[in-house]
Length: 205
Ligand SMILES: *[C@@H]1O[C@H](CO)[C@@H](O)[C@H](O)[C@H]1NC(C)=O
Image 1: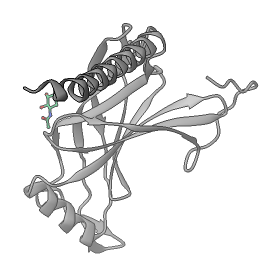
Image 2: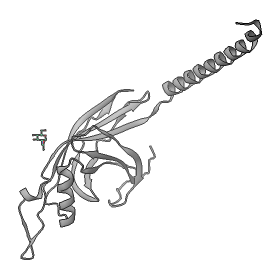
Image 3: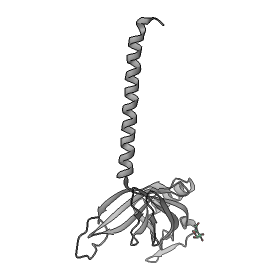
Image 4: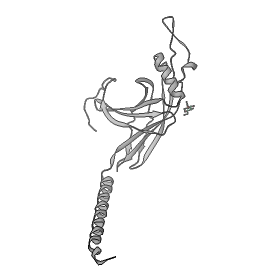
Protein backbone atom coordinates (compact mmCIF):
# COMPACT_ATOMS: atom_id res chain seq x y z
CA UNK A 1 0.00 0.00 0.00
CA UNK A 2 1.75 3.15 -1.22
CA UNK A 3 1.03 6.49 0.41
CA UNK A 4 -0.09 7.83 -2.99
CA UNK A 5 -3.12 5.50 -2.95
CA UNK A 6 -4.45 6.69 0.40
CA UNK A 7 -6.32 9.79 -0.80
CA UNK A 8 -8.38 8.30 -3.67
CA UNK A 9 -9.22 5.27 -1.59
CA UNK A 10 -10.47 7.37 1.29
CA UNK A 11 -12.59 9.38 -1.13
CA UNK A 12 -14.07 6.12 -2.47
CA UNK A 13 -14.88 5.00 1.04
CA UNK A 14 -16.39 8.38 1.92
CA UNK A 15 -18.63 8.24 -1.16
CA UNK A 16 -19.62 4.70 -0.32
CA UNK A 17 -20.51 5.65 3.28
CA UNK A 18 -22.45 8.67 2.07
CA UNK A 19 -24.33 6.49 -0.40
CA UNK A 20 -25.16 3.92 2.26
CA UNK A 21 -26.28 6.63 4.69
CA UNK A 22 -28.51 8.10 1.97
CA UNK A 23 -29.99 4.68 1.28
CA UNK A 24 -30.66 4.08 4.98
CA UNK A 25 -32.23 7.51 5.32
CA UNK A 26 -34.45 6.80 2.32
CA UNK A 27 -35.41 3.37 3.67
CA UNK A 28 -36.18 4.92 7.06
CA UNK A 29 -38.26 7.60 5.39
CA UNK A 30 -40.23 5.02 3.40
CA UNK A 31 -40.72 2.90 6.50
CA UNK A 32 -42.01 5.90 8.46
CA UNK A 33 -44.26 6.84 5.56
CA UNK A 34 -45.58 3.29 5.42
CA UNK A 35 -46.13 3.27 9.19
CA UNK A 36 -48.01 6.59 9.07
CA UNK A 37 -50.06 6.27 5.93
CA UNK A 38 -49.95 2.64 4.91
CA UNK A 39 -51.75 1.28 1.90
CA UNK A 40 -55.42 0.67 1.17
CA UNK A 41 -56.82 -2.72 2.19
CA UNK A 42 -55.96 -5.69 0.00
CA UNK A 43 -58.45 -8.37 -0.97
CA UNK A 44 -57.82 -11.86 -2.24
CA UNK A 45 -59.83 -14.94 -3.07
CA UNK A 46 -59.05 -18.61 -3.47
CA UNK A 47 -61.18 -21.43 -4.86
CA UNK A 48 -60.48 -24.20 -2.36
CA UNK A 49 -62.69 -26.72 -4.16
CA UNK A 50 -65.45 -26.93 -6.73
CA UNK A 51 -68.02 -29.43 -7.93
CA UNK A 52 -70.72 -29.67 -10.57
CA UNK A 53 -68.42 -28.66 -13.42
CA UNK A 54 -68.44 -32.04 -15.18
CA UNK A 55 -71.19 -31.88 -17.77
CA UNK A 56 -71.10 -35.63 -18.45
CA UNK A 57 -72.35 -36.18 -14.90
CA UNK A 58 -75.11 -33.60 -15.40
CA UNK A 59 -78.63 -34.40 -16.54
CA UNK A 60 -79.11 -33.95 -20.29
CA UNK A 61 -81.43 -31.04 -20.89
CA UNK A 62 -84.33 -30.79 -23.32
CA UNK A 63 -85.13 -27.51 -25.04
CA UNK A 64 -88.17 -27.30 -27.33
CA UNK A 65 -88.39 -31.10 -27.51
CA UNK A 66 -84.75 -31.32 -28.66
CA UNK A 67 -81.81 -32.51 -26.60
CA UNK A 68 -79.81 -29.47 -25.47
CA UNK A 69 -76.39 -29.11 -23.87
CA UNK A 70 -76.64 -30.17 -20.22
CA UNK A 71 -77.12 -27.55 -17.56
CA UNK A 72 -74.60 -27.28 -14.73
CA UNK A 73 -75.18 -26.82 -11.00
CA UNK A 74 -71.74 -25.58 -9.99
CA UNK A 75 -70.62 -25.17 -6.39
CA UNK A 76 -67.49 -23.30 -5.39
CA UNK A 77 -65.97 -23.33 -1.93
CA UNK A 78 -64.06 -20.07 -1.74
CA UNK A 79 -61.87 -18.37 0.81
CA UNK A 80 -62.15 -14.58 0.80
CA UNK A 81 -59.51 -12.65 2.64
CA UNK A 82 -59.16 -9.00 3.58
CA UNK A 83 -55.90 -7.50 4.80
CA UNK A 84 -55.51 -4.13 6.51
CA UNK A 85 -52.32 -2.42 5.42
CA UNK A 86 -52.66 0.72 7.52
CA UNK A 87 -53.68 1.83 11.01
CA UNK A 88 -57.40 1.30 10.34
CA UNK A 89 -59.33 -1.91 10.42
CA UNK A 90 -60.40 -3.19 7.01
CA UNK A 91 -63.83 -4.68 6.43
CA UNK A 92 -65.66 -6.14 3.52
CA UNK A 93 -69.07 -4.51 3.22
CA UNK A 94 -71.62 -7.01 4.66
CA UNK A 95 -73.75 -6.45 1.52
CA UNK A 96 -70.98 -7.81 -0.69
CA UNK A 97 -71.96 -10.43 -3.22
CA UNK A 98 -69.53 -12.90 -4.74
CA UNK A 99 -69.80 -14.06 -8.34
CA UNK A 100 -67.78 -16.66 -10.18
CA UNK A 101 -67.42 -16.32 -13.96
CA UNK A 102 -65.81 -18.63 -16.50
CA UNK A 103 -64.99 -16.96 -19.81
CA UNK A 104 -67.70 -14.38 -19.34
CA UNK A 105 -70.42 -16.82 -18.22
CA UNK A 106 -71.65 -16.45 -14.64
CA UNK A 107 -71.33 -19.86 -13.02
CA UNK A 108 -72.23 -19.19 -9.40
CA UNK A 109 -72.98 -16.53 -6.84
CA UNK A 110 -73.05 -16.21 -3.09
CA UNK A 111 -72.84 -13.78 -0.22
CA UNK A 112 -70.01 -12.92 2.11
CA UNK A 113 -70.91 -13.80 5.70
CA UNK A 114 -71.06 -10.71 7.93
CA UNK A 115 -68.08 -9.83 10.08
CA UNK A 116 -65.26 -10.01 7.59
CA UNK A 117 -63.13 -7.37 9.31
CA UNK A 118 -59.37 -7.38 9.75
CA UNK A 119 -57.77 -5.55 12.67
CA UNK A 120 -55.23 -2.82 11.81
CA UNK A 121 -52.31 -4.36 9.88
CA UNK A 122 -53.83 -7.81 10.25
CA UNK A 123 -55.72 -10.02 7.86
CA UNK A 124 -58.82 -12.14 8.17
CA UNK A 125 -60.33 -14.76 5.92
CA UNK A 126 -63.68 -16.47 5.81
CA UNK A 127 -65.12 -19.34 3.77
CA UNK A 128 -67.74 -18.36 1.20
CA UNK A 129 -69.92 -20.75 -0.80
CA UNK A 130 -71.01 -19.73 -4.30
CA UNK A 131 -73.65 -21.79 -6.11
CA UNK A 132 -75.16 -21.79 -9.54
CA UNK A 133 -78.28 -23.55 -10.75
CA UNK A 134 -79.07 -24.74 -14.26
CA UNK A 135 -76.23 -22.76 -15.82
CA UNK A 136 -76.42 -22.98 -19.60
CA UNK A 137 -73.23 -22.94 -21.65
CA UNK A 138 -72.55 -23.41 -25.32
CA UNK A 139 -71.24 -26.89 -26.28
CA UNK A 140 -67.91 -25.27 -27.14
CA UNK A 141 -67.57 -23.63 -23.71
CA UNK A 142 -68.58 -26.87 -21.99
CA UNK A 143 -65.81 -28.71 -23.82
CA UNK A 144 -63.29 -26.01 -22.95
CA UNK A 145 -64.34 -25.94 -19.32
CA UNK A 146 -64.17 -29.74 -19.02
CA UNK A 147 -60.70 -29.85 -20.56
CA UNK A 148 -59.49 -26.94 -18.43
CA UNK A 149 -60.81 -28.49 -15.22
CA UNK A 150 -59.22 -31.83 -16.12
CA UNK A 151 -55.85 -30.13 -16.67
CA UNK A 152 -56.20 -28.00 -13.55
CA UNK A 153 -56.03 -24.94 -15.81
CA UNK A 154 -59.55 -23.56 -15.47
CA UNK A 155 -59.24 -19.85 -14.76
CA UNK A 156 -62.24 -18.28 -13.03
CA UNK A 157 -62.97 -14.66 -12.30
CA UNK A 158 -64.15 -14.21 -8.74
CA UNK A 159 -65.68 -10.77 -8.27
CA UNK A 160 -66.60 -9.09 -5.02
CA UNK A 161 -69.32 -6.50 -5.58
CA UNK A 162 -70.52 -4.13 -2.89
CA UNK A 163 -72.77 -1.07 -2.90
CA UNK A 164 -70.92 2.22 -3.18
CA UNK A 165 -73.28 5.17 -3.08
CA UNK A 166 -75.28 5.03 -6.31
CA UNK A 167 -72.65 2.77 -7.86
CA UNK A 168 -71.06 -0.58 -7.28
CA UNK A 169 -67.53 -1.21 -6.16
CA UNK A 170 -66.03 -4.31 -7.73
CA UNK A 171 -62.86 -6.25 -7.01
CA UNK A 172 -61.85 -8.91 -9.54
CA UNK A 173 -59.69 -11.87 -8.59
CA UNK A 174 -58.49 -14.46 -11.13
CA UNK A 175 -58.38 -17.86 -9.43
CA UNK A 176 -57.74 -21.50 -10.29
CA UNK A 177 -59.19 -24.38 -8.29
CA UNK A 178 -56.90 -25.42 -5.43
CA UNK A 179 -54.33 -22.72 -6.12
CA UNK A 180 -53.09 -20.17 -3.55
CA UNK A 181 -55.21 -17.06 -3.08
CA UNK A 182 -55.10 -14.59 -5.93
CA UNK A 183 -54.74 -10.90 -5.13
CA UNK A 184 -57.81 -9.01 -6.35
CA UNK A 185 -57.60 -6.01 -8.66
CA UNK A 186 -59.66 -2.94 -8.08
CA UNK A 187 -61.72 -1.36 -6.87
CA UNK A 188 -63.53 -0.62 -10.11
CA UNK A 189 -66.48 1.66 -9.50
CA UNK A 190 -69.18 1.05 -12.07
CA UNK A 191 -72.52 -0.60 -12.75
CA UNK A 192 -72.30 -2.45 -16.07
CA UNK A 193 -74.86 -5.20 -15.69
CA UNK A 194 -76.63 -4.43 -12.45
CA UNK A 195 -79.55 -2.08 -11.75
CA UNK A 196 -78.61 1.15 -9.97
CA UNK A 197 -79.25 1.16 -6.27
CA UNK A 198 -81.98 3.31 -4.78
CA UNK A 199 -80.18 5.81 -2.58
CA UNK A 200 -80.86 9.46 -1.94
CA UNK A 201 -77.34 10.62 -1.19
CA UNK A 202 -74.13 9.85 -2.95
CA UNK A 203 -71.39 9.08 -0.49
CA UNK A 204 -67.88 8.75 -1.75
CA UNK A 205 -65.85 6.63 0.58
C1 LIG B 1 -67.63 -27.34 0.28
O1 LIG B 1 -67.56 -27.18 1.68
C2 LIG B 1 -68.54 -27.88 2.40
C3 LIG B 1 -68.35 -27.59 3.86
O2 LIG B 1 -68.31 -26.22 4.08
C4 LIG B 1 -68.43 -29.35 2.13
O3 LIG B 1 -69.47 -30.04 2.76
C5 LIG B 1 -68.50 -29.61 0.63
O4 LIG B 1 -68.27 -30.96 0.37
C6 LIG B 1 -67.49 -28.78 -0.09
N1 LIG B 1 -67.66 -28.96 -1.52
C7 LIG B 1 -66.68 -29.30 -2.31
C8 LIG B 1 -66.99 -29.39 -3.74
O5 LIG B 1 -65.56 -29.55 -1.89
